[in-house]
Length: 294
Image 1 (tube, rainbow, N blue to C red):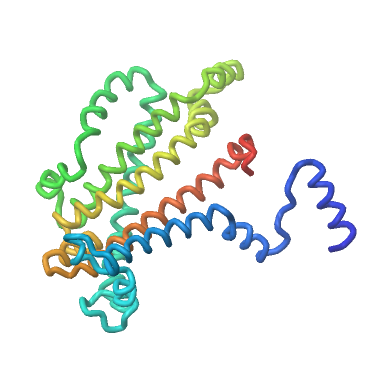
Image 2 (cartoon, helix red, strand yellow):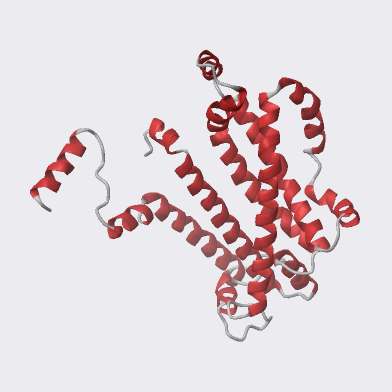
């Protein structure tokens, strides 16, 4: 370390700032080798240990049909799996691709329709008085209750599944966007009025940035509910995807395939939510700085 870099580091520490990582090795280490990551890995390891204990060492009644994780993992990475599904099976990736495509299409529709509606509900009192009761009337309806209507009204296989998946995320997006607008301090609107902001400028400079934290919380919730609603839609109305794989494995008593599909769904859902969180952190860096987290 040169004298200048050493001086700069001391200056940053004296001001109460932590010096940034100098290269990608340090950045990678600081990002992934943290106490939080270690605790998360410990939790996952403990979960699989309990699973192995209850399926291979002490097997309670009705647990004898559940595969132990060691056998499950060996089948998952096998070139010749007993039930035809592993990381070497092209059909496995076709199911994943179809499910991911459906979820992200439904998620995109939920955002495109839900965010503007939620912002309008919070922004316009007349619109809120007319539309919000309808939203609250439809919101408690389970996504699977829409399946018969979707199958009758929409063409093909894909559109009913995407519609059912979209309905789950739509209301989460609407409600969080609405709550985001309602959480904005009245002072900001008064300041905007004093500065002569037009209604469009109030929307783009006050409402959208102020509601953004709630909106991204709604995105995470919407993505989560979209994944588990997708399974129901694929089981009832689909002929492909991870939900269909679970149902097909159940009908053929292929329990290993059920667990492979379930773990795959959980992993994809986690990665999707992590991606949304990461994008939200980038867009709301100002909020993290206010909290002293960036």
